[in-house]
Length: 311
Image: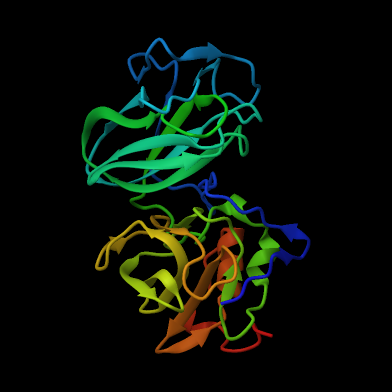
């Protein structure tokens, strides 16, 4: 599965840092919990963390920062009351600056154990940036941490976090962070058959486009990948991962992270290969993805064309 290095004037820089992500579409209907670094009794950090109001992109009056440490985590923690066990979207707010860390480790205390997501804090500041959807246990405890343990360069920053139950939320999600690509990339034709190749750096988060059950793929063509059998019966295929985030048989919700993009299998450069099949018939995914980008309900998979999206 070939990938062009230049598409419509968009040059793709290769790297290994997970891109900071914005969840597409309308906000979830469920109430959110926001904890800032100055929320009383809800934020804790050691004396190694300083306080700054330098950036106008900050959330609230100020934010915390610290130098990287390659020998210890020394995490700053946000304490959040999770009312009931379930799936929650976790977002972070931070100011961006060239002097801030390009691989800040955010730690989410999920049901199955801590999960670490690296975020480039040199970009996408002054807005809510999603770390993904996680299974969280009920209770009032430390849920999100910002670790100093990184080989990245620049200060690590801890500002604010937002946790939102996905119950009653959006039924669909882009397969990649909204900020990863412009809208124009989602209507590019494929080089061979109905599908699409989306050029993103290795390590970019890949998300379930809708709820369903996953099956891992590991072969010489797709490389590491996922077949997501949606609740609509269609199969949504992701290829060329560098790593999986879910196991075969796992049930996922829209927006849940299922892997990290890469360059495995038959691939000539880092990208996500994405396809849709209904009853073994390949469908053109471009209109589906454009609808997701625009935040509207996508067309039914069975209504997607079977030709006209390749060259």
